[in-house]
Length: 388
Image 1: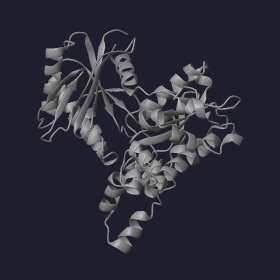
Image 2 (image 1 turned 90 degrees about the vertical axis):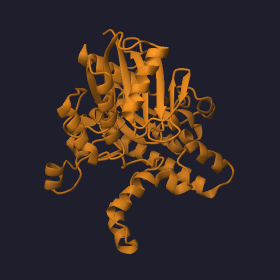
Image 3 (image 1 turned 30 degrees about the vertical axis):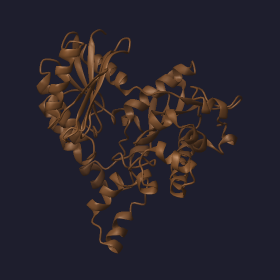
Image 4 (image 1 turned 120 degrees about the vertical axis):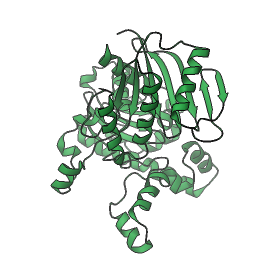
């Protein structure tokens, strides 16, 4: 496997990118275009920063290519492919896929399942294909890792026509991160990945838990959409499915308004008024009761999923924290696993506060680890493996 891969992660108003060598994992450059469509846009390409407006993703991609031309590394020298993160692949996409017009249309059709993500992914892919038409483009799906879930875990107890005609089932997300972190955890513990059972906790603005048996996803907290499961920055996670009907009856809210609130105005934001765990922790330390409640709800939900997935796996070798909150919030890690000592899960306070990679207490049966995720590296590896 040789050559370079440009990895693009396009949000509704941003383009994150990284140029890597998949073999070594070496990062040649990383960059970010933010606030696309706003009057205060910015492009950061390595150490070079440019403040300017970007009307749309096509202008943003043109600016990215111009930054490569001016500051290097030169493109398309050595470029073998562009890898795109795509959030939802539905039932159709279970592996990295070469992008053509039909694939792009299918990704767009899945926007109903990931309304915050897939439209932005499609816009970014279109812009990148226009800007770099002579190299293959590969879609790597967050849902693909979870296609190994058994039907008993992926199936909702809903009517057959919902399931068969409308694809109502659990899909799961953050799969690229969960798979990468599970493999890295096995390496950290010097165990074969095929014989390592882990619960991976991807805790960022979006958050999910996955039960990984021998490197394979067997259950996960997110569902049909990224809304189900853990408490997140602006997403509620688990709520009674009757909430929408109830609020329609008593408050006159339509289902679109309820869905928008659960997606964009709930979670930490709904509980504490802020969606950043760092601010929640600061306010909690200052005695803010809303922040303290948000913290407790957040950690309680994680603990509940750890217990449930321990039961799913039977044997548990490691609980692993990753992503922004998971890697940098010792208080969350400690509170989320508090009280599980009789299950062989215990956090060493000193190691935890020091952000060591292995933070479990001496003698604990289950390792507790902090493993940085690297979705871009995983996307680059999968992209190169498909095209080379």
